[in-house]
Length: 169
Image (cartoon, rainbow, N blue to C red; front, side, top):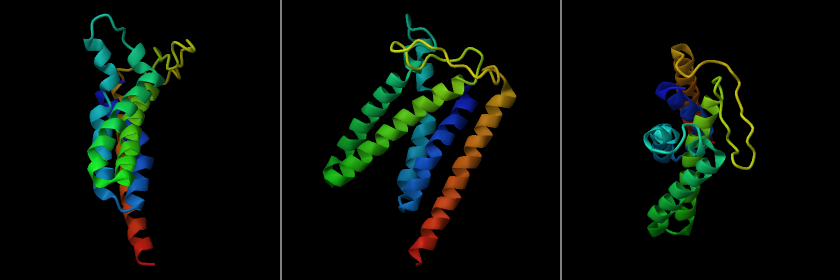
């Protein structure tokens, strides 16, 4: 997929997390996490700019997703450490989820293409391809973006509304 499709996939992957944050009244964190997911959506494709690293190679694996999630989790946890253990732990979990979901949603979107991905390399070398559309297909990319915007927008509205409703009980 191209950039627009990956943005949509990141929003789709992040929507349930954002919904839960909104449900708990953490609107700013929910919006920040959503923005972070979109910013990180193209990180796996940085392999195209690194000499000697094959495209859809190591940066398109679940291990890379866990690594990016770990790096963001540690960074977010350190940033929240001045606010206490609960805040640091909560931010670490959120950072991990945003990083991992962003990379894993990228891999899932690339699995829609005929070229597919090998997300478990080197443990398992099986290629996954659902052969739905080529990466450059503008309809597929904009459909994925539209789905991401629609689902994350619904999560925002429903999560906020439900939080307000529950707050009045």
